Image 1: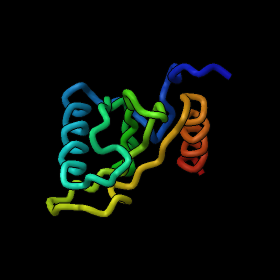
Image 2: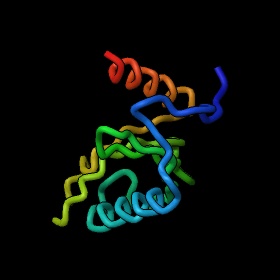
Image 3: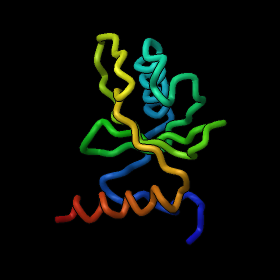
Image 4: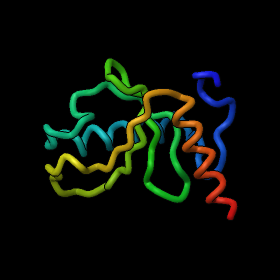
Length: 110
């Protein structure tokens, strides 16, 4: 199996416009700022896609042991310091994330 990004994102995943992706990156930075114990604190990220039915965003990680992460943004105005929030699932490879996307797609269509 190739470890390249998928040629297309299956529903419920989609690729929003650049402005929306930038807003998601800014929101993640805001949510992580007070949370020094979160595994993505101080990690350079790039938003790639979002899940249409949830506040889940796929980020590419730079200079980190894992390549990708799906983060459930809280969009909360409070200061979250629990290292479990925002909820984050790490993926070591594109192929690993693509399998997760396929499961999401199957659930979406049932």
